[in-house]
Length: 119
Image 1 (tube, rainbow, N blue to C red):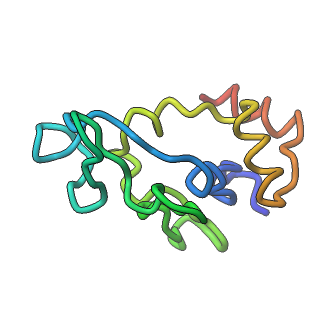
Image 2: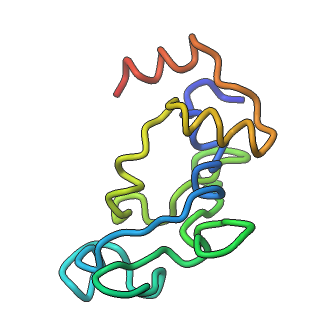
Image 3: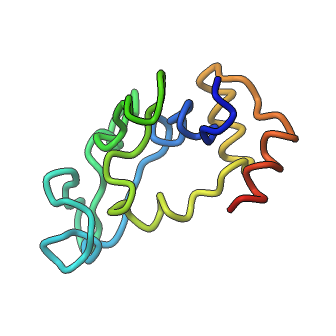
């Protein structure tokens, strides 16, 4: 793997494990950034990303990113993603647990440190 590519771009585990629920005010039609067609209302003032409401989970925004390199995948609406996605911490317990659940290798300490320094 190319070391210049962030480990998340060879992973996508969080997009395949968690329900992504957020305020409807994050939808474009409500003045936010998340495209309406990629989510659905779930009651009250909540919306959920399509694909995260069932098992197996796979967020509709998770897509291949061949322009970044072979095997790269990530959020197709990265700049428009919802707050829960923005807040999910790289190399957190949830990140490691999800990678393990999907059979991905554990991130190595030096790999994590290098990317945390660039953040």
